[in-house]
Length: 344
Ligand code: CP
Image (tube, rainbow, N blue to C red; front, side):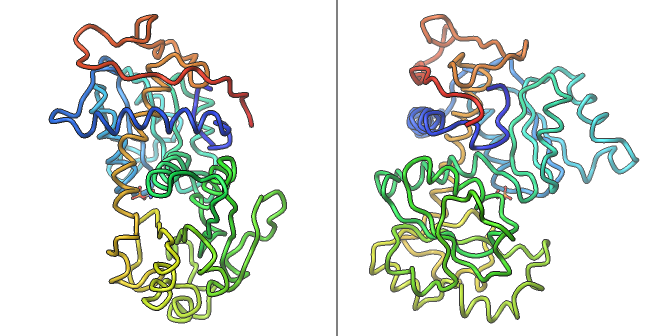
């Protein structure tokens, strides 16, 4: 697999491989000097056409902790403003000698299109309503860390499913790892068809709250005009928001509360609820760095069967025995090369 565009491309074995390797990078991140030189000589570019805090900063941190050089392209201050096309922009960036493009765009399919033009590894950092694969990976890692396993766990994904790349990615990842997913939303915030989605649906949060292990709240995406799809934000909060009373019930049932961020405090989650101990939002952000280290390592440096890149610039610096270059303080174990079929 040369590019990471869709979480389904990894299959269950590929997700497991990333999660196993993430354990090693959690350990690296806890060191006084949280760095390994595994990707020394590589250059990772954040190519963000849409705003981001978590994804952009954690990819940048992940690349730096692996010893890579980093560059950041921000659309708003670029020559796109002068009419340059996305294709010419990508070719311009690549001409500087780069190995990976981490791409976010408000339109579905742009990372895949860039992958067709590109000689670099392309990682989808969120495209439109379509996919956000590394968010799904860090969400799986966080649930495992908090609850031990996803297998047999019941997860409610609540809110604006229709416009959510996180929901699409998480449904695939969670179900591949054995969880049962219920989508909880008003009909107007669900996709027109759920054919092929391995989920059940409820329009009543109160009905599912006491029965699930994870309540995964989605942001009301004001930039996607979701307010026109509910009578009012106040009514949405009253019906689907994690109010203090609902949070008490979820807490009593031992449920973990998650949210991909950025949160609208007071809309999908009550302001004080967001800081409770059973809310894993900070863990999700924290885990984003080692998860993305694992992804960058597997795609640019490891030679693992699943992730080996055909890019000439990403043949990897690791020796045949899997060790890093001389001077690596502690080689990072590589997954045993799972045989994941492409396109699952
Ligand atoms: N969860 C997420 O993608 O957040 P950012 O938009 O801040 O990257």
